[in-house]
Length: 178
Image (cartoon, rainbow, N blue to C red):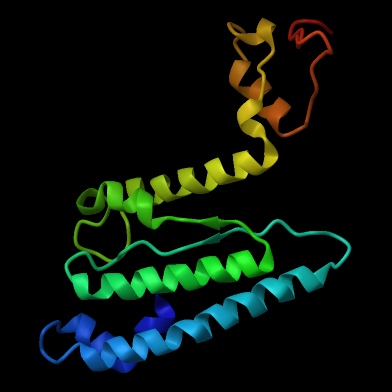
């Protein structure tokens, strides 16, 4: 969105909607989208080149609609997200759609500013975390049966998920054993 908002005509329209025709700013915004896509691909490839022996874990997020009061911007944002997703697909990295989660509670998450509320950012973070959990198969984490009522259950579970500690082959952790 920042790339598009750097176009003076787009910013002028955003700051004073209806004061001019949207056709010119719209066309300039659409013209910038292929440049944004190319930049994203270059950035991703540069990150991958830093250590060619490793496959870095890179995730990219689309944009939410920061202008619910300006519906004429929505097709541009959707086109921008499509280009970001194409860049992700072309470079083999996961794309995370943040528009869907913000749209669920648009007026609550964007009460008048272009930046989400804390709850909005948490919703976006949750979508990201769910995608990461998918990749690392953390959703299938089986909690050891003997920590269910243990006072350190949360810390043990987090340590197990992060690979800091391991349980026993029988599905237990034996938290009180030395």
